[in-house]
Length: 142
Image 1 (cartoon, rainbow, N blue to C red):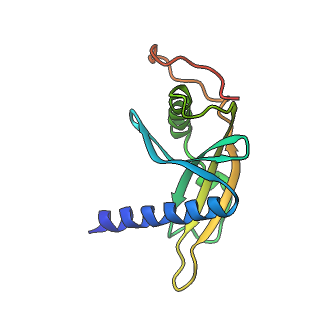
Image 2 (spheres, one colour):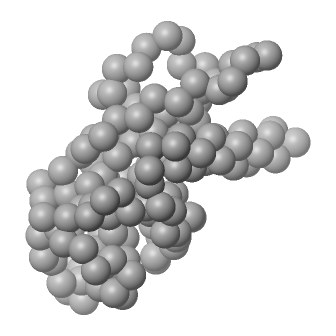
């Protein structure tokens, strides 16, 4: 029961994030795109930039929108960058301009959900794949 509620809340959060991005002029290329153990929540095109968006949906987050509190961990960032690299290698991403954003969605009772968008939340060039991944060629995403 609790898991179903969390899944529903996460799906609703992603819907709000997609609506927010579309209002900003993004064209959605993919949702919940999986590669190995990683998932890209939203992949969009904004102008000549491909944007990889991680959606965080939190109900108990207080009033803080401090981006450091909602940032994906270093390991999660590494997996997101590797998945973005795989997305790019499959020719689904012809543009060389890439960006990693985080969208925080907070449900509020009897009000529209709050959406906070952190553009360029982390840099894909700063993270290298861990050792032991010889099949994964690394190339800078910027």
